[in-house]
Length: 398
Image (cartoon, rainbow, N blue to C red; front, side):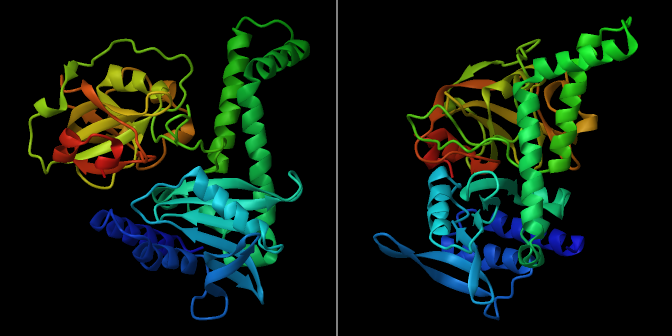
């Protein structure tokens, strides 16, 4: 797939989303989804694409937004959602139910134009059950467009897509095993080395553990944007949350120093109500980075903004922190309290990722945090200072 074509598609789509972040479903389809499918090689001016394809269901019938056909048979279903909404587990279940009704439909694509999830029927491993194999964001494509090879018309027609999906599944299993059994694998490495070369003067146990961690990191880099875990539906009574772009699971990391200046009520935040606020999601495991650096990373940002608000996922589910932006710098130029690899693995520190540095003394914990209701930022979203001051729930922010 031509890298220039991908870059042009990403840049054009980013501009459209930035200009119209509340884009409805029909405009999302025409402006973002159709160009994406054309980028993959599907011709909208032929019989390869059928719009509003009828899917028979037990209770009657329904329609999927796009069916991509080889000959007379649909092989890929595409379900589109508006840019202004996030993809949810309910959306995934909906697409799976559509795929289940058509024998030849082995692939499904769920997208809102900025986030993408790819499903396949895993015939070898799960008896044909529909499973999620790849998730990626629009920004990821600029870094590595290779993920699109999985979805191209040629890959689907030739069967190459099935081979790629199988490789992805094996890599995911290996990463999951290394992560869940790190101690046991490290012990096995240590014993194998001792058996081969005898006792050494170095801390072989620590070296073995680092070897296992580095191996998992290399597998993540090769696998690119593939998800390791299922998305958890962000319902109020659910303890899970969607993905967070930023520090991710630094094991047992505690902040060396807490640079949170104190607490502040949202009504007491000074500034122009039209000032731009970048809202980032983070797991609780990302808070040590935030607190000890008065900064946020490692993220891609597409435009300038004045403030940062942090939505904490997991059991918290609230916009809980606020800060004034001082600068946005490349990772290597950031003045961090620790080395970047102490916070995240190598795959998270990729080209064009930045660290957002806060003005000294401007990081506050909100006295009146904004609680989750129906939607939350699964990735970077923008709002205004006025909306942030007045919001009763996360639904009022965007």
